[in-house]
Image 1 (cartoon, helix red, strand yellow):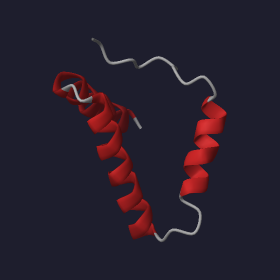
Image 2 (cartoon, rainbow, N blue to C red; image 1 turned 45 degrees about the vertical axis):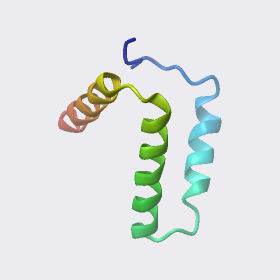
Image 3 (spheres, one colour; image 1 turned 90 degrees about the horizontal axis):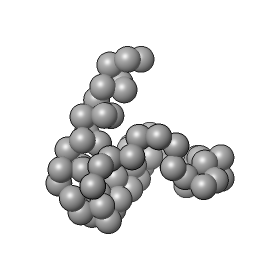
Image 4 (tube, rainbow, N blue to C red; image 1 turned 120 degrees about the vertical axis):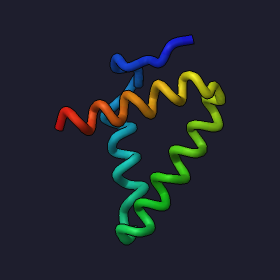
Length: 66
């Protein structure tokens, strides 16, 4: 199994809107905690340590390009 880095969400604008709405009314600390919980939930759903390692690397590389 490979990490999918190309757009793969059927309705990306809907998902982005839902993600932003989930943060409405949260403090910065609450928002960071929410993101951490979301990452752990999604990581658990994926369940494959190799895929998760690739995702961690991809996220780090993306932040270095900014």
